[in-house]
Image 1: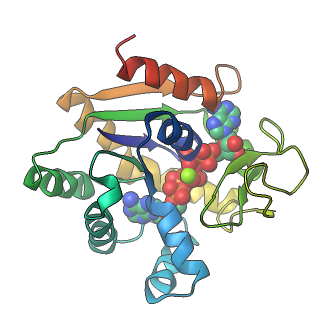
Image 2 (image 1 turned 30 degrees about the horizontal axis):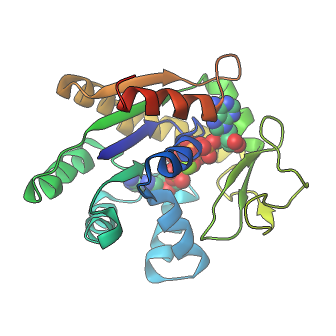
Length: 220
Ligand code: AP5
Ligand code: MG
């Protein structure tokens, strides 16, 4: 099963994808995580990606598509994958289709998360992520805090703030989303496999969103 997590920054793509990955037993592939790992390891890709990410812009399509193409060739995603943050442009969506068609595969479900903008800024500034690249658990110091302050519940590593999680860069990321990614809502609506969830502190938390999606997949 191939699932896409679509949504503006801070809408909960990573949170929901992580829960879905455990529940469905298929890997989560986040292009943002791949770029951050490369930035941390100071690779050539990391140097290029950092230039764009720090400005709230998208990494160019040709670079991003190559990375996803390689990742989708790995064995662990043979039976399914949750793509967290890819595709983000029409060009990426069309390329993904071409990559999948070669293996007789298709996108089965697109989960579109939406959250009011003021809540996004608040969430992102309260976000802490696990510094262990193999864990990458996501917390919110207000809504979903770790049991021990600054320490990951899952692996015991230190929690850190993401470099791009300041209000100024977040606003640019939201604008980039509106300019380049928002058109994908219409693209996937026309294909008939878009499922929208409003995620707000006034509605439901990531866990409930993921449970609703699992029920939908199982046809309950
Ligand atoms: P990426 O890492 O994907 O960042 P993003 O899209 O900005 O999204 P976030 O990771 O910030 O948010 P999220 O939706 O995962 O929310 P989360 O679950 O953490 O990309 C980073 C950068 O890499 C991009 O800006 C771009 O430069 C580049 N990039 C990545 N992919 C690319 C691509 N395909 N093409 C080109 N460039 C690309 O949740 C946020 C917070 O809210 C957390 O604190 C969480 O605990 C809390 N929360 C989650 N759900 C709920 C809920 N239901 N209620 C209350 N709080 C919640
Ligand atoms: Mg994320």
